[in-house]
Image (cartoon, rainbow, N blue to C red; front, side, top):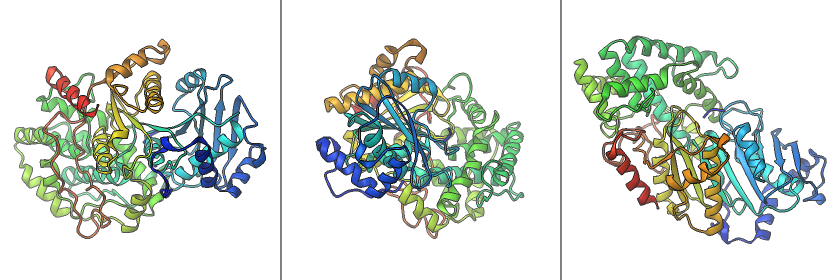
Amino acid sequence: MSDLWSVRRSSGPRRRFVQSRVARWCVRCAALGAAALAAALLAVGGAPASAQSAGAGSYSGQLPDGAHWIADVPANWNGTLVLYSHGFGPLVAADAPDPTTKQALLNMGYALAGSSYDPSGSWWALGSALRDQFETLAIVEHSVLPSRPTHVFAFGTSMGGLISALEDQNSDGRLDGALTTCGIVAGALNLNQYQLDGEYALAQLLAPGQQIQLTGFTVGPPTFSDSAAAAAKLVALADAAQQTPQGRARLALAMAFLNVSPWGGSSIPNIYDFPGQEQGQFDDYFTGTPNAITFIVTAREQLEAAAGGESAGTVGVDFSALLHRSPYYPEVRALYNEAGLSLGADLRALQQNASLRGDPAAYRWLVRTSVPDGQLQVPELDLHTISDQLVPVQQEAYYHDTVARAGDGALLRQAFVQAQGHCNFTPADLIAGLQALQQRVTTGSWGDLSTASSLNSAADALPSNLGGGNFIAFWPDRLTGAVPQPPSQAGIGIGRGTHGRRRAGSGRRHPGVVAPGRRGRARGARAAARRG
């Protein structure tokens, strides 16, 4: 989420790669609209009749809604344009995730473009992001590039990874492929719901007598004063709880709902080292400045501002069912036994004291703008670190199921990097992913392009200053607290929800990380083989 789009599907052919280049160009111009295109072109000193008149250099302009766009075209342009979507944060135009990756892509001949999204809106910019990105694409193709691009690839980071996934399913001839990195691909409903489940568990179990605000925040950037105050209370409660066995057990329960990775320290704890797993989760979520819990609590204010209310709720959530179907259950049960606490009593307390109800209108807005339906139009490669404290890697398992249910699993591949932290990729990891996607589009087949060994070979062949590859054969476990698929229009905590009654997933595994030793590696290898 550090540094989330409403375009209706066309009735034409779903598969981009069977459309002609001329047809694609006409679709792009029509999608933007003649008036909007003309106004935007004037912002860069061009006119609608002067398409393909520019060349190498850096360009910028303004869109009709006030969003800014930028583009960079190298002198050795290779014919490929990368449409970059930035993550959650200040609404400033970007066309690459970081300066090193940007320069490396330009050196390799890629043209880059991206927008700020509507600068007057929420940092959760899904209300304008798709429109702004596709308008940017049309302007750059029409007035900046020396000729029509051979390939156009969407590329997004975090919230931008969600935008890239939505761009894929709304491509309608404008894209050839999509690369999502650390993306919120399980969508905003899941993000809001499992985070609220965990935050509520922290407040209820660690301070049942206190009134800690968890939703309905009204103060946004730069201070986020009301949400920041709530986060500070949760951090103080967690710090105190970590000092006792009872506190650590209850923290483990709350962190299970939050999908926190146990790899928060210097090494991955053993699959049966439950105290080590809890310590890693605590380090991952509550230590450092800023820390993850503060980020997610303050970010909720911007999601609420975008949706016009809070989509998630705790009323109707079956916390016992969530835990018993969670890969974190063995850890939580072991720590409760060690602390001499009744897990059943705490789960009943969560159920009985739940009082937060979601706003139906906010829920529907997120369904409409911020939740992928999995109906891919072009090939997509997703990259994710295996220990991501802000966007848990388990989101990829949910998204895999979403795309499979839509019947487009053949277009999707997912690859994983053995690293801690949100979006903690090397530039080589990112460029290797882009190259694999481009080869898939060129050849028409994934083959072994998305396997860890192939991606590492490609990454390691790049200049050494780009950091090399860190891909690993891996498959994530299920997302704890996931909303039903497809999302219910009734919502969670809105009347009678279905949260917690989901089909069983894969067998018990170390959640979010690879277990050490042959057993964990073999599992990852088998999963990779199943995905082709």
